[in-house]
Image (cartoon, rainbow, N blue to C red; front, side, top):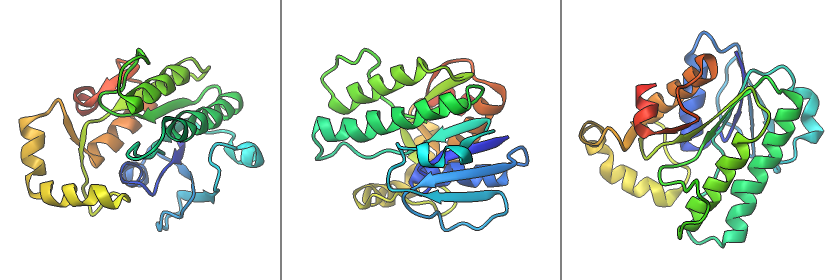
Length: 219
């Protein structure tokens, strides 16, 4: 498979990139983001852009890919709904619409989050916007699209969150992460499992369009 990866420098994206580099079925990876991954590998090519939503200038580079793993996103903490929507919904849909036009046979996998509101009418701002984003992506003419909703994610293999505020609780919970996963398998996963599950869904499909943590772990 040839895959496009958005957000490879984030915690989830780092995990997905690692698994893609290790997987013999992945022939090439095109990383699109604002910063370099710091990785060197014959399978990896990187395009640095400050506007990942506007893919028209690089449209020729996007042809012939089998899957897109979209893990680009921000925390809603301290953000207005308009600002959060601009990044979470507008940017994602702008990129996805371009990819659907260029590669309609592509599988698109979006990393959302546990608690996302598919009704788009709940009280939680981030959950509404995420739900609207998921629903819009599922309507695009891709061969297949899957929404991944992980809960607690244990970072493995030296991977860290880019968000300083998140690194503190991860550091505190680190020694107990394995226990958390065993005690709450419906709500906890790892960067490795998440990356492997995304590859599996792109290659072989998944039983559901929307996958919660338990579904991700099973996959």
